[in-house]
Length: 401
Image (cartoon, rainbow, N blue to C red; front, side, top):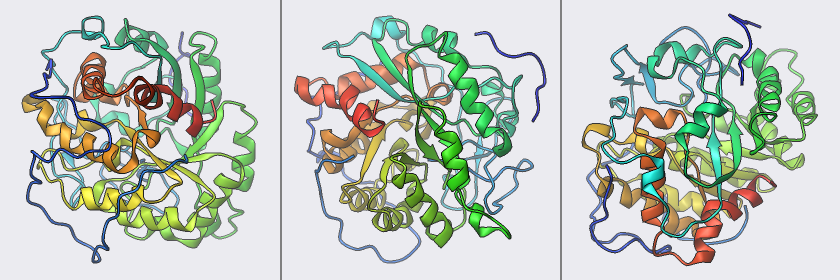
């Protein structure tokens, strides 16, 4: 356990045309060219049903996968982020792109407003303090290598009606994951809106010599009543990682305890995790960040077909989050994001899409008010019931808030 210092104390993107209605794709936007590697794709069906991300193994900067380990990048598909804020990403089909700290030209959160005010459950928020525990990936992301605490979140969301927060583990050292849960429990005293914790657990423990499996770890995490889900990043792992028998059994153990499993993956891993979801029919899954589509390349396929196959599984829902950091902030346009946002609503339906911010990682691509404004305009023509599902009800059901 590493404690470096003392503990913590507590653009305007305008739509060109009518808002997208749920359940319909944006036919006016033709899919960009693109292909994928891997096995042949089956036909992608559409499904709208009920029911209810990102860790790369820890190690030195640029180090690749270690069995049962964790990532240096927290699911940001970056191999390194120099001091100027540009990110060079993992080789292969994990986007070869650049992330830059956003310089939004839009108004702040107060000025973005909300067309029809609704209560909001932010289903994807991180808090961390590098003075309390070690987050190796932060050293490669200077813009994020500082404490981000509830007071910062309150300032970023000023004027937005956030009623509940789902904290998602933030990729500290694996041996400090239990302490991260305790850290968040302490934050509740200053931020009572924290309603749920998605904690880290190494589900591959049984693969190592003498490994006992994850059951004891999961039971220990459940001593915190706010732990409602588990996440172990699949992003950055080698092909087949999510289908190892011990990992599959670990995900099933998550479901047996009534917990959700958050899927942090990139677009080229969708077929593998669809197979995982099929094998774990009694576990509820939440897909983070729409599986990080290749927005910078404007490559809609095969992501769109693969997301349709995943959505056909009734035990998975999807967070509309993370799109800003997959787009190019210096030339981001709303129409670049719309085909991806519209596709997840088309295939998952408003019954299984959740609002999430991915704050503060969001700040690599823009301000909170920018993202909230996009979501607000995207859903402006939805019925009050559809908006209530998206902003609150679906997260309440998925995480049993």
